[in-house]
Image (cartoon, rainbow, N blue to C red; front, side):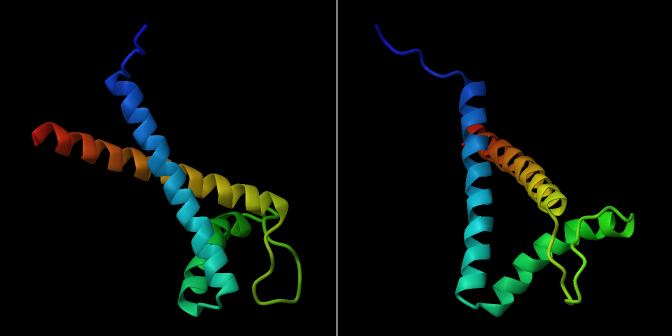
Length: 109
């Protein structure tokens, strides 16, 4: 018995999921590389990707940053959950837009 060929929708979902996972993996690898490799510009970008999504919540007095005397206080567990959810949602829409452009390009070619 032959395996059923995937529908166009299944292919699009698989493509979007692959792009989404790749973007999330790149973000994690960039963070580890910037931290472990002491690459200052990359570390600054990754730090910004953590603190910028938390800033509005911090201004609303949501406890997303720990209270220390440091210039950059560490995120709380709630803060890490918000950062993770924020970037996963952003990457989901970027992956959807990328998959849409690739499908559109494939149709016109």
